[in-house]
Image 1 (cartoon, rainbow, N blue to C red):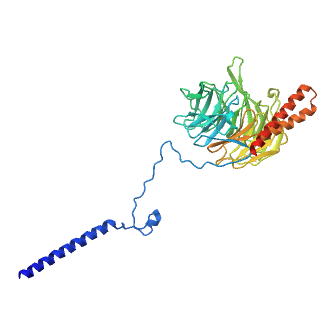
Image 2 (cartoon, one colour; image 1 turned 30 degrees about the vertical axis):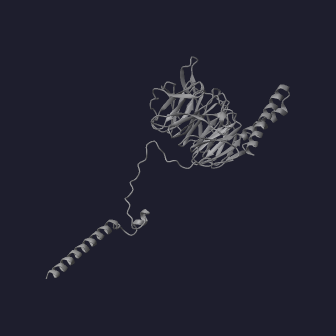
Image 3 (spheres, rainbow, N blue to C red; image 1 turned 90 degrees about the horizontal axis):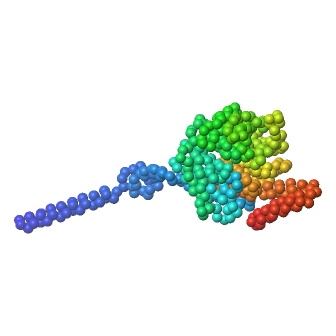
Length: 441
């Protein structure tokens, strides 16, 4: 009996151990087994079958950081430089009146000032002015090159920055204590400062142009009556403001001041009439004696504006040419009026103004639509912007135009001093072309 009882006890003990072992194995499988999910769940989220992954929470965008897109690649034999420093899209360019500096602004909350002397070099240094709590959409140098004004994209107003030169040649930038008051009711399309230093212009996309003094007081309100304004600017001579828009003309006003410098009035000066559709843009030569226009009708026109409008003289049409047009479209007339550049989309085409022939064609210059186009004050370079880079082109068309014009004058010149001067200009232009050609090779 005792043996039987001992056998039963051992059997019960073994059974209990087996049950404990089975239970332990079951719990281990439960911990390692995948959670139940549809068969296609693993494919949908890219996870391997049999493994679970918590759903990812969307990342919040970090403040002040932008996702950088790949830099657009562009190469051309006439590309003198690509100015890279902005981390956002460049929206506006402006050369100083002394020709030493180029200002650029972008949606990266900075304005940068570049030295034109560095354009031919490999390295391009710039000075940076930060735009606090906003970004500049437009920028313009003051006539004395000691300040610049910006249009604030969010604040919708003018902010003035003073430039103070340090001993090492660099600048410090200080914003004025107060911005201009908000007056416009529609988006701004352009701003400008008169070369005389007497007034500032702002133009909006409705039909409004405001003339301000330098302290931020409105002197005059111009209604262009053009349905909408597409472009407006101050003439380089500082006498005129002009606008174009839905109507097929360009209207020009003179901003008049008294002998003591006090503001008097704004009067209609003249109009450029001849296009059959709305005008996209226009540009003045440096002496304001020539203007160029480009229209939705697929043509550009060159005008003689060296007139006395008070004697009822009208501008004279010098030349008309056909061109490809699409929005956005910009036009730039070189300061010496010998060359004209038109940008449509991401392309730029250059024409001579002697016969209207196409001289150069630059395609896909920027990764985004071109936002600004300008010649430097000496007509040596053409600059454009549209993405994060600023492209600087040699104005070879301008050098060729100088040579052609001077050779024609040389044939007629009889005075020895005049002939020597003309020959020197021809030699200088040819030397510049040879230098550019050598760099291409």
